[in-house]
Length: 103
Ligand SMILES: [Zn+2]
Image 1: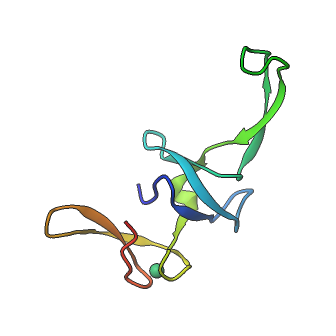
Image 2: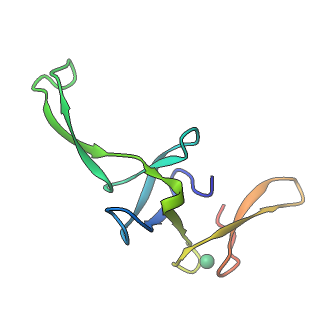
């Protein structure tokens, strides 16, 4: 995946198009990610031990990573990244716009 937990990303399409936020969690299996404060859905929950009232809880729903673009810490733009392997064989991501390594 081109994004990971802790990345700042911008949403390219869907209801949250144009907004940005931080990735809280990624789901490699489904190629989706939870972005803080975006794509909120209301869930109706039954009373449980944690939430004795039950009722409606708002939470983030996962967004498909193809709709997300990394915001480069170097140039501040929503960019595409390429992968580069260093001398020790570690793979890092590089901003295609400014060439900065983004980790
Ligand atoms: Zn950049």
